[in-house]
Image (tube, rainbow, N blue to C red; front, side, top):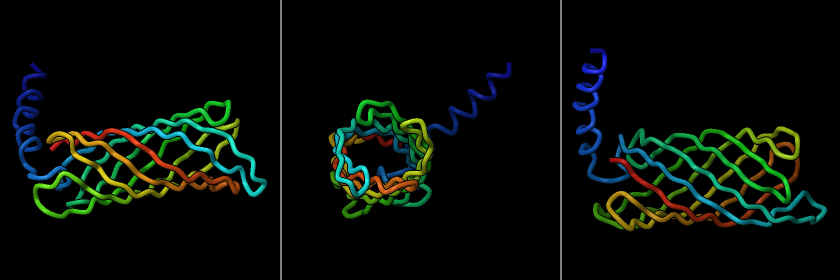
Length: 167
């Protein structure tokens, strides 16, 4: 009996969420996405480099047209070691014509990161675009800069991924 009120509430709420927005970047839309990157970061000023592979799923909610807040997880192999992080993310998508297939964006995130047996904070800024390949699905490409807040390590590179908009 308890499931009936919940089922009724969800069935009334779902059409509002599913059909309430005309654009993927309108208030109330949801982004479910992820990206991967291969990079060669600097380990401070000594010039040492290693190759890293990371994957980063994320979820964001549009609190205003173009402005999405949420969070993400980063998992990767840095050099020969596993690392992971979690933290908040904010993105702004630029809106142009109503029916366009390309959404440029800028994004920033801060993460608690665990790598090489120690904890640190990591800041990340990026800019890129989502190319819509279907009404709700897009391919993402972005340039990024990441700075480890506990030392001089930084990372500059490109990320590619897939994004689904629920609107």
